[in-house]
Length: 370
Image 1 (tube, rainbow, N blue to C red):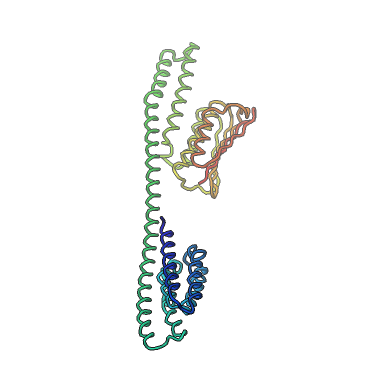
Image 2 (cartoon, rainbow, N blue to C red; image 1 turned 180 degrees about the horizontal axis):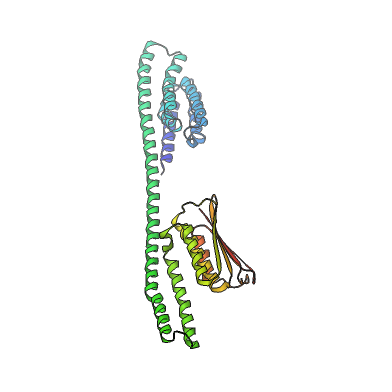
């Protein structure tokens, strides 16, 4: 059972007990007193239990409740025992200072209505006066305690939420660190085995026939070089070492320059907008997309000119790689490279667009929020 449910039960028990006490007495104002108890309970059930602090509706609810309570105590002083339920509710729905004033007023109402009803003899005032003072003091202290408990509970809830968020962040960072470590390990294995093996094969074949006059040896060298390039691309895709020696712009610029050196095609790179630091995950996705797009141009496009754009917007960053190569038909399989780019883009909430027409080149555009 929740705290709210327990409080609902307490208020219902108090109201029922007061109603039973009023009903047990043969007083002229009994019907009015019972009606007042019922109205106070109804106000709480349909209005008061739904309210929060710092709301003008809370002030209206307390005013209405105290007005009905005053009428009930005027009819029968036994109704004053409703204070056991009313005072805590006041502290639950009003800020502390307003609640203190309302509680003092609530405890004064039975005395005021008693005097107004004709019970103004000295014994009555001497009896009810101390009760009013003690009741107001106790209610105020109890209300302050309730307020502090609520504040502490909220602070604990905020702290728990913060700790849970911190734990989730630590788990995410640990996962990313583990993934990065595994990718670095695989990159090292590929570099030390496949890449080194292909390099040795090329060296040995060229040593055997420096001019590569034998077509079979020339074909073997070309095949080994292609596979060496593939293994280097895998190493680059697994370990983003390019980002470790400069900014994202520098890393993409180096990729474009490298493609130009290897193929002889003219590769240009430019940026737009105001460059800014980006989350590592976003930078890795953008760099990988640039590497994969340029690799596709190198392997398939036969392009003479390639343009690379890194555009910084207010809420996103775009990478555009455009070539004047052979292009491909829209229905043609895009291969693992573009599928990998699409998957990486999805990991950071980005989108990938590929536009290509046979004979007119290809444009790859990746946009990620950042």
